[in-house]
Figure 1 (cartoon, each protein chain N blue to C red):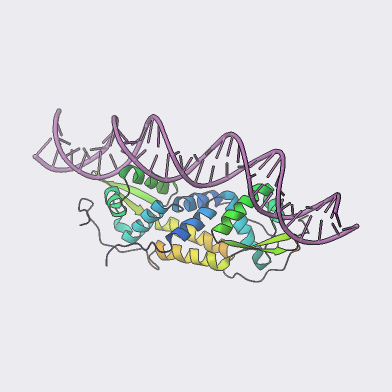
Figure 2 (cartoon, rainbow over the protein chains, first blue to last red):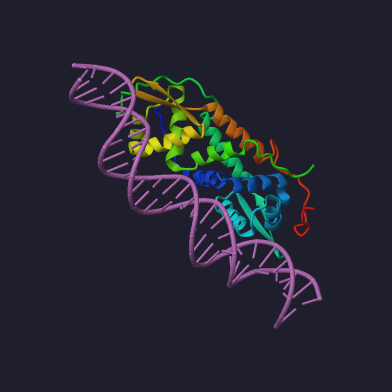
Length: 117
Length: 117
DNA sequence: CCAATGTTTCAATTAATGTTGAAATAAGGC
DNA sequence: GCCTTATTTCAACATTAATTGAAACATTGG
């Protein structure tokens, strides 16, 4: 078996990782995960995390575009929730490509000088 | 129990996510994971992924600073390997804060108009 | 010591990202 | 319809990240 990478889900994974690779956004997402199906409105998030409303809006959009959260209007409020299946997919990808699915050991040594033919 | 976030490992997690949130770096890391303990030298990585040597060096440094890979000199070669325990920690963090450790359901509804006291 | 190869650093450029204040939009209550 | 509140958009700015060519450094072999 040859060393080979599967680039199929790559762009989606990179987007999701990038969305979470920022302090404010990671906090927002964790907060939404913590509140579960009830979700939260931007006002509550902004107050809880002390993020200005427009900055938060920007970050929510990023998370939304990455497919990690979704929104639902409720009157004049907008409720955001974490997309748990999407997050599960991300973790599954990471797990699959971290330890090749299960273990992390045992590969034959390669000679650095021997370039791939 | 109150909604509360643990910011302890946050900066490390953000760094690791940021390191992986880039196509070239994700490919490099996945390649190193794939080769396991034998690791690879920059030359091999550059050739395999068709990344210019200096660009690769930049990305390797980023991954290294994020603690996801480590290097070991072997003569005039430098061997890079994925830091599997570090990756496992990252995945564990993600898992813990994705579904609160295990499940993803059941939280009481909150009223958006009711701000946290 | 010199030449050859592998790898990194440097400097410069370009592109992308995060933040902010002010203005605009959306919906509900009067 | 108008006021109030919630949320988003816009424009501008500051910061940071990615890419490249050229030069420098490190190590081995002759």
